[in-house]
Structure formats: C-alpha cells, structure tokens
Image (cartoon, rainbow, N blue to C red):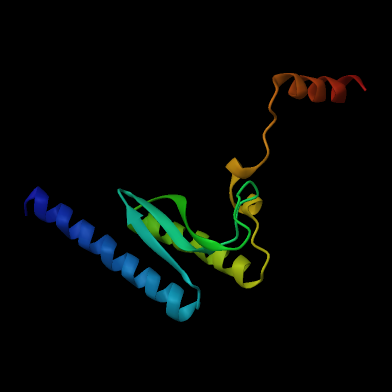
Length: 123
C-alpha cells in the first residue's frame, strides 16, 4: 500500500463518517445543523442567534469552528458539541457565552485587574 493510497483511504473514511454524522443530526436528532470539514478542522453550520456584538437581530446561517480535527475522534467530539448546540436551540436557550470562552467579556485595562486583585486582599 502506498502512502497516497493510505491518505486517500483515511480521507474517504472521514468523509463517510461526516456523512453518517450529518445523517444522524438530520434524521435522528431532527436538527437543522450539519458538520463540515475545512482543511483539517471541523465546523458546525446552521441558523444561530446573532452574537451580542452583531448588527444582526434575527438568527442567521453561521459556521462555528469547533476546535476539532477531522479525525474519527474529532468527529465524535464535534457531534457532542453540535448536539449540545441543537438542544439549546430547540429549547430556545442558546447563549454564546455558554459555549465559547472567547465571547466572555475581557478586562480592557490591567489596572482594573490590579484593583480587583488588591481590593479583594486589602478590603
């Protein structure tokens, strides 16, 4: 078996697993969400509410980077995350802050951090 044949088989396996995962999302879980691969990473696609800082006011089609590699294990992790998204969307309680740390508000000044740290110790 050559290296190219092995890589092609792995790629075909990942594509087949993605097809199976998307079939499960649509037909078993009844979510309007899908997984897809871009490069070596996996993304979830679907209609999600706008982020807090967005000019959008209604849910719209978005792709979410899942921080999962396009491997068998990555697809399992991506499915788990996407099912959580689907459950939250179905229950109408989807909140970006529940899923993504980078959406958490960050302190803009080091001084605020120091004040909070020292304030807790000296008050």
